[in-house]
Length: 208
Image (tube, rainbow, N blue to C red; front, side, top):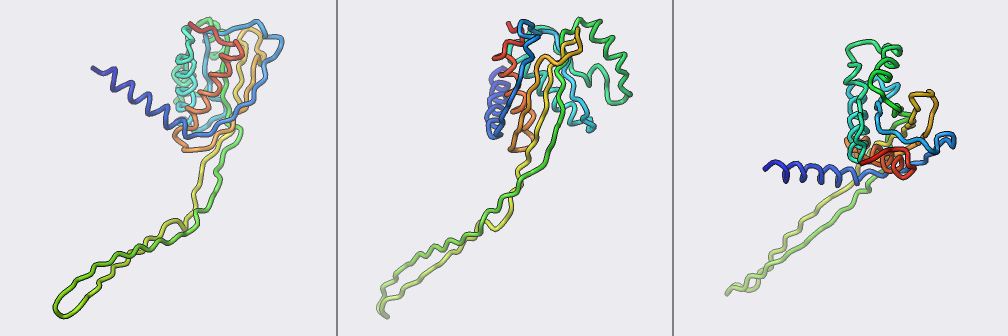
């Protein structure tokens, strides 16, 4: 009984995320041309707002799974909650213990908003009614004036640097740069979708 409801939510999210404009440029290191990854740690690096970290790690982890990754996909905040100080030695230990092959690092390179002005416009609609009586002809007119615009619209934008770091060598196998603009609540999903699609297209993910 729940499947149609969950499906409708997924479709709604995909539709709204489509309102975000995202571009991506990416480079794969030739030294990792034959390497594929299926066990990954998703980590939002240098993101000091705990909630924002969770949003981005959730979005990118979900996207990897959606793209067909069937290995381990761990979120950093679940392994190292924001309640504690991050110990990089403990991170390295986790990577070894879980057999993780790569770390997908997400960094916010820059963010802001663009302003656009919606000019004011006025529309007047006039309607009339004629009443014929013994006294003569009476015409009643009604006018309605509607004003729209005259305000500024601020559209959020964000640039990300996303790196896939090889866990065994500690080197960057792939790096991508995204720029997105649109509703703030859908930026992470749109960027994750663009990165996920490119990782699959570049043959870096072992899927299915």
